[in-house]
Length: 96
View 1 (cartoon, rainbow, N blue to C red):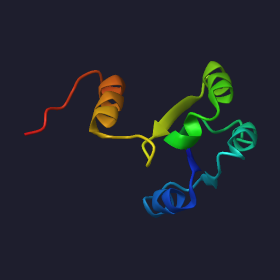
View 2: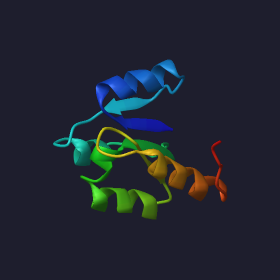
View 3: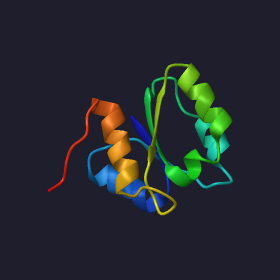
């Protein structure tokens, strides 16, 4: 698994135990995605970068990779996160 996105979130993922990450910008995201190694089956990508490289992401998904947008300042409210969880596990958690 690898995270691709901004430097601050990359540091956070490393502190949480994710060993692999790449810092990318809107200008470099397409290049960074093309450089990912064959061994990376799960790619976490910042939402603002996810929306900038739809063709590259479609290609990664067609090749069997799992590409997951990670909420950032451009998107990621509770509804977005709830939708990701519902799709991943098949049901919805209710908050009290």
